[in-house]
Each structure stands twice: as structure tokens, then as C-alpha cells.
Image (cartoon, rainbow, N blue to C red; front, top):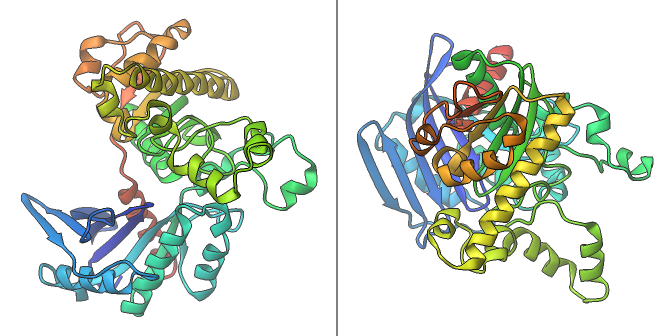
Length: 392
């Protein structure tokens, strides 16, 4: 690459995580990170560069596009770094459908193809596309790449990906895709590099969005999330797996409009819906309200059940990994999940768990239990470098 800096963009439904990486000797090393928070009014920009921490409020507002927001963001960055050194930008895109099997270099055709997948991920895909187009408009000279959350799960066999629906629907794209693939790719690599763990592994990515993935030899075999980011285990505000008869009833006998049902499933369910208190598991764990305790109990029950199901797909369980915000930092959630899995021979070291130690199982546990911090931005940076190296 002509310059020695690389930007990464990890767009969520209400935030954008930005990473700044130095590219030397074929490796990407993060030197700064930031978060654009669209929930704050005005938009907040929190930046960490080594020991220095900056909190900025942007004057721009997020409209139909993000051009003004990114223009101001780039302007702020230019005061601290030489933006001429930025040679490329890598983006996280939630849905790659069947069109994208791995990271790609972005051009007009690939951006349009990503946009065409919006109906499959209406909560996340539009934000990614707006961000890509905003950066393209500001820096048309900048090489850009996309990394897809669905790509890691393309190794799932068809019997895992197929629903028990008429076969014609498969040809229309109605199948299980799986998500959080960048996180799981990082975990698979970290397990191999740090722990020498390459066997039958189930990883639980527990954050505001949450899922569970079964890996064998570092490759995805099955996942709790399927066609959409609603499936699987309950999340902060999303419902998780749901009897489709409930949807028929809501839109039929109850007369709910499609838009109302979508809002309930994505924004008013999960921990928030059950507790009626908060979508934040930390708040619920500190609450004495029975509804809060019930929400956590349902959350951990479903996680444990999904781990057990995925273990049957890969024919055993050598190791369990907890990652992401809840998985890395909430011992009570991990303990409740592991207690339900004791039948498998899993034994938790309570002191290690309370300390968020890297290994929290006992020496005689049949299943090793790890706590690993995930790093999606590192995967985006590494994949961007790989794509750009291939393109020369």
C-alpha cells in the first residue's frame, strides 16, 4: 500500500467503531480507536490514542446520508494524524448473502450488490452502505474493502443451513446464514495461537446482539443465528428463536401491522421485553425485581440449551468460549450457563470466573472454559490488507 495507515469501520445500528492501524512488515497494529455514538445529541466521538483520551461533540447531524458526519470526523482526525498516510479503509458488513464468500475490494458494483442485500438485514445493512458511500464521496482515491459477518459460516453444511421448508424457497435465499462471523474468526485464531485449542469448540458471543457458534478445527459448522439477526438466543432487545405461529397470530388475530411486529421483535423484546426494566444485563443483575431475575434466567437457560444443541452438531465439546461485552465481563451470567452444563462434565473454577480469568474451568473439568476478548476490528484490518495485497 502507498501509505502506512489503515482505517477500519465497524458500523452497528447506532454506533460506528473506528480503528486506526499502522501497517508495517505485513501486519496491522492498532494505534488508536474511536466510537461515533449516534444516540447522543449532538453526536459523540470518543477517541483513545495510547494514553490520550478525547471526547468530541460533532456539529453535523446524521441525515439521509453520513457525508457531513464523516467529513467532520475526517477533519478532526486530520488534526491529529496525516490523513495522506491513510492508504485504505476496511468496513464490516453484516450480510454477504450467497454473493460474498470472503472479503472483497469495494467498487460501484460490489457496493450495489451489498445494498441489494438490505432486505436480509434491515437493521444493520443500510448503515454500512451509507458509511461506505460517505467515505467514497469524501475520499474517492481511498481503496476500500468489505468484510462480511456471514462469510465465516459458509463452511456450514447444507443440512445445517436448510430450513424444513419447500425446496424452492432455498433458491430464493431463504436459508440459514449465521452472523458475528468476524468475532468468531478472531476467536478461532486466538484459540489456536494462544491456547493450542483446535478441537470441538462452542463460542458464545454475548453482547447486545448475541449468538453461539460451533467450530471444529477452527471452522464454523453451525450457529444459533439463522436467516436473520433475530434468531437463536434472546438478546438485549431482540427475541431470539420464536415459534412462527406467534407471528401469524400477531399479524392475524391480533391485527398487528408488519412494521409494529418488526419493531417489537428487534427493539422491544429480549431482556428489555421480559424484564420491562432494562436491556442492560448489568442493570438486571443488580436488580431485586422478580422480572429482572426472570429475564436473566431465560437468557442463561437459552444460551446453555443452544450450547448443548450445537455440541450435538459437532459430536462433542472440548472447549467453551465466552466473548464480547457480557461474555467477557459478567461472571454471574457465565456461572449460570455453566451450571446448566454440569451434566457434560464441565466444572467451573468459581474464583477464576469471578476474576474474569482467561481459563475459568477446573483442572479436572472435561470441558475447558475460556474467556477471550474478541477483536472484530483486527480481523477487518487483516482482511483488508490481504485483499489489497492480492490486488497489488
